[in-house]
Image 1 (cartoon, chains in turn cyan, yellow):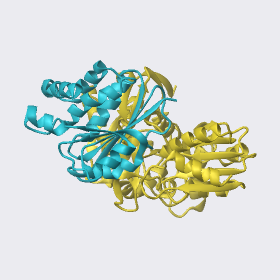
Image 2 (cartoon, helix red, strand yellow):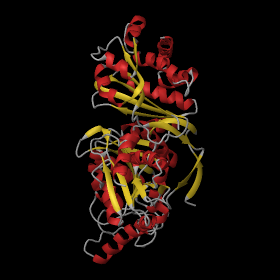
Image 3 (cartoon, chains in turn brown, purple):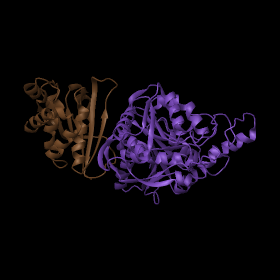
Amino acid sequence: MERLEVRYAGTGGQGIILLGVLTAEAVTRAGKYATQGSYYGAQVRGGITSADVVLGKEWISFPYVEKSDILVAFTSESLDYYVNSAKNGSLIIIDETTMVLQDEDELRSRYKFFKVPFTRVCYERFNSGFLLNIVAFGYILRHLKRFCSKEDAIEALKSNVPPKYIELELEAFNIGLSL
Amino acid sequence: MPWNRIKVPIKSGRFLLQGDEAVADGAFCAGMRFYAGYPITPASEIITRVQDRFEESNEGVYFQGEDEIASIAACIGASWTGTKAMTATSGPGFDLMVENLGYAIFTETPMVIVDVQRAGPSTGQAARPSQGDYHQVRYATHGDYEIIVLSPWSCQELFEFGVRAFNLSERYRVPTIVLTDEAIAHLREPVEIPEEIDVFDREHDPEAPPFSFDEVDASPMPLLGDGKALLVTGSTHTEWGKRVTQDPEVHRKIVKHLIGKISNHISDIFETHEEFIEDADFVIASYGISARSGFEAMNRLRKKRIKIGFFRLKVIWPIWEKYIIQRFSNVKKVFVPEMNMGHLSSELKRILNCEIIPVTELGTNVILPEEIVKVVEENL
């Protein structure tokens, strides 16, 4: 059975869980199956936050990530916490603007490792990092083509953000697509 | 007739729903029009979903009690007016509800309580799952009684059990609990909302005595507002609700009624999900989130040609001992994954003669399928 395990990891306040919800919603809208679970602390800001999304063509028995196929990390702390539960040779994507790595060579030898300037492009366009998660949503779609289309993703976005922000959100989404 | 097929009052179709939202929607579809509760992680999303449903339909009354004690008390009052009432909480809030849960059981008041388990005891870890309330929901309040507790393993079942909990509660005049856990209640997955559902509405008889000594069936229920004086008390009472606090025979009769109206219908109430039990030497038995792990573990073990089956309790209380004994008659070992020190394990040890091997997790992490596979392979 086809199964893709995606984990988004960062810190409270970055919109990590919304990013997970958007992914699951897009895949559900495409008629496939998605489960989305979250891990967070009691605080509203800070601490490690993660969103698990498991994708499949049909019903998924175990709904959480066991060993990730794709790990997208937005803080060094969350990368350290989750890197050992990534499959060998799996995809790891990090935010190159904000994260300083001590062991980049080792990561490159064990995983398909990519650095993406999520935060930098957000600041360049919006002078703020608050749409970081939406840029990442646009970016990650290239890895989810078997499960959902760009149109499904846009529908998911529209149903999960307030209408007055949708133009801004779509712009961030398109920046992510083009990265 | 008490059973009716009704059109659901919300949009049907396939939606990505969080577990908490799904159980609120199920309850709303079943006719829940009174909700009282006090917010608590990981059950708070139920309150907000109920508020949304009441507001958009312009039906129903929502009340945030000053605490969980007031909330369950308000539900009992609402139920006696004929309104389907629900509250939702987590372990710390359930602790506070226990006194009035006993009152609801003894006054045979239909209502639904959703308990979204989190790690305890006490405040514990608010946003992390556990299955430590397995026995609490059954034995929390004092005295002899039976109670019905449903255990969903998916967002789909949270919707369905939101409906079924009301049907059972209305039919057997007993508070019915949906016992879920943070890992399912905060999970999101696709849920199919059907166009129609079957709903049981309590038998209402303004002329009937409010209580009964019948050892087999629940009795019809008169309501506040029917125009007759209605005595409802948590003390031992006659069929007409008159307090009788020193008569052993009345107490004997009424407790037999509380137990008999449920135990005589156990084949209607009890429900399981079974895979490959017929030819299994080994079985993974579980409930709730741990059953999802157990199901996946079974799939992996069967690929390795191990004759293992799967047994999931969809109803954890009452537990149908005779049925379990019969289904496990050829089983050599039972593996029981659960997020506690072994609650279902202890029940199965009491009921069965074969070897019971707990696979426990206290660290608030959902048990991974591979952990179960490992324990099974070490114990074949």
